[in-house]
Image (tube, rainbow, N blue to C red; front, side):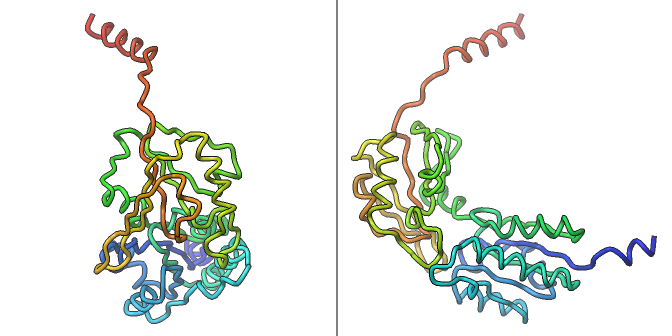
Length: 270
């Protein structure tokens, strides 16, 4: 038993989320992982958050410098995985801190956990409050009322996704549509025009949509703007903002299954 313990890698990694609003969204468990780590890597929203992390740990290493002008984001994300795994393989307890929820719109946390586990290291993910969670609260949306579909804007163009206009549709990263690098923030109207063309297959041009960004500092308020769909291509939309589509068609009752459910109820009564 002692020999097995000796051969077991000591290195580990925990990917945690700090939530969206600085300070108020950090869970006690995520804080514990940060404080007990040997090294902390940070992929967060800005320098203010990094400085806040440095108050909890003396060795916080920013992952932001791995971005580069015109550099494909996937190259950067793979470099993140490798730099984190280098410390894990060296026997360190690593904590990787991500903005919001570490498993939402974040390739590297999932990948580094996969790689670490494949190599025999302990790896886990701790959830954080995401922009989706804040969106439901700030816009008063209950996803259980009509249903809620989440799509990334570029995927809507790259793949044959089907939109359900009877429920809410949350379209992420519209400000980055068609953008494969992190540096080119905000594409021109041409990419958005293509997106508009796709969206008008399911929605009228005069539909009112909401552009949303949650608060990231306790002193801030969420940013909520409303405009018509036809205005979307030329609106100022940052990479952090989300476009929310309300239900545009009524729900249709599925009479076939309603009748079958009624028949089952009658059988139980009999």
